Image (cartoon, rainbow, N blue to C red; front, side, top):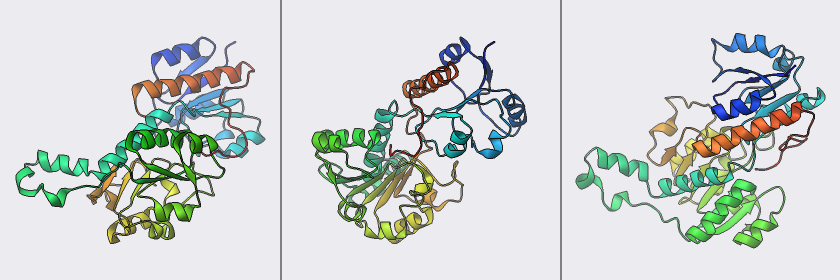
Length: 325
């Protein structure tokens, strides 16, 4: 008898076909208030679940007595209570590495569009303001040969460093829980304290996972340390930033601009001041959102799921503790 699994987010048919070769699949293209009761009913006999964003904690796990594996189709896994899963002997997996290059592209895009004010200028052209408003007052900032500070030098940070160093001639500073000698040798990245990084960088890119230690790690103190001409980029998790402190720093001119792919509340509230600021570029958490990369992520999640239910070690099993991306 095939093990029962739940896929609770939309995936490509080839991913479903792969899972269905060995599992009995219950498929939801997404969870909402209408189908969530049905999901909970199916969960009672499920041995595996695959998706992203679902809060998997003690409350949910109490309703899933047969569960053996939880597979996130994402690199982040702050939605999972890893300790609770471990205590119950339930495997947890994520999908690191396969999205590194795509997210790095997004980060570079945020740096360029924020520094050169591309979304703002695009709207000015489209609204017929070319001749009346576009001039020296619309100038942006150079990106090339500036100092890029990366907080969290994991796979994505290394991919950004490669682009920044060899594509734009940037000098790289980084702060991490441990030294990344590979990034130092390949990209000339210099390890430094967080304080020094914030003081010296023209661009500050936050790429840490969300943990109790990193929640609101960028706050009032940190923004005050940054240059007034500096640009802040966040593609990690919204809660790694004290959003009110960021808004104040942008309003008062403590920092020049921000490029954001993540927010404390997602979708972002319509009255959030960040949405009315011309010096802020906002994206809807789409760092890895290309067809090719999302397919790779889903296939890796599916591979983890099948391997775990066949008694094998999943390729990207989450172990105790959290690693910087």
